[in-house]
Length: 455
Image (cartoon, rainbow, N blue to C red):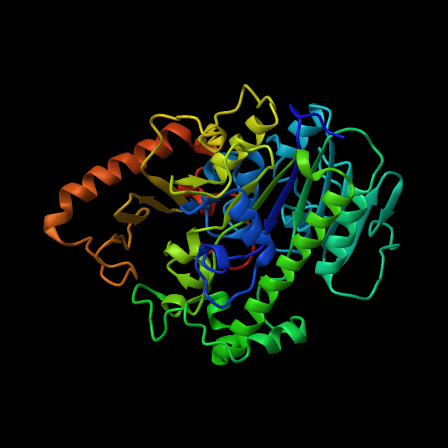
């Protein structure tokens, strides 16, 4: 059993779960009772963002506390390509798992990794279950599956397998506190073949919380936006909603297991996603790479973020501070009194004191983002997107134009604002980025996949 000063950590890092696709964030049709409960009893961060709206680099940022322009992963990593799969993409970084292991925690991963070499347990993880090249891979002590052809072939949905392995981890008699990372896949495309009874329950939904009849006037459709599912949006959305509800059921299953094992009262539960998702929002399907040029629309960059711990002094917190995965890294470490690597430059700041009902002065009022040579700064009202070196650039007034339909970049009246925001944006990256890993030179860095927007 973990001590009060060293709480267990259960970190859900789901794939493609959008911030808008939760009951607790205002969706009137989707059913997420377990996550709604955690949000009600804990803290819901209503302005949570990803540093980059695509999977692999977003995961790397949460696990390392560092920007893509620091850790050097700038796009999703293609599976099955030996050149890509064989690299240790985070070899010079220190992950949460490594930090917690060094602090005496029992550590595990069940679910998605997507940061290369899935078939090998990565540094810091004692227990390892993931999918690599399409099949389950498990490493638990001396038992290895997938490396020498002995990978398991069991029937059933991968969500259930991930949950089963997480339950096994929680049932260990090991007395050390634990850090368990759970990564569900189900909300990822192609948004079909979800649990039929759940899909059927949504087929007559109005999907009234998804704006209809929109188009994205700042580029062309790309990748998931060109999938056949877009031609039957009602069925695709029914499948997406079903996937969210299936994941909520899995979260509930793990909550029950924590309670049964006596861990619930000293476990910090964190639920988030690598990035957001569009299901026809703006006419886009997918995330930042659902369009060319790459987009930074709100649905791509916003993520759900719920934190729950029974020992937090105040539940039912809805907090509007701008936070992102870089801040979450710091927050989880502070909550467990974990020392960070002193030689690393971390852009994030812990918001754990806010959740303890303490005053935290000087919190930032802007959010930054990047995706290769595309960079963004967002204030409470405006969003500036700059695509280096030559554009196209965009400025949106999110108060007057929340659907991001009118580009004000060439309006002379906004030139002072653009200059000020550009200075802040460039100053931020100049301060934090590693020039060798900068997204501005993404085309010179190792290839991530065959669809990079900058090649």
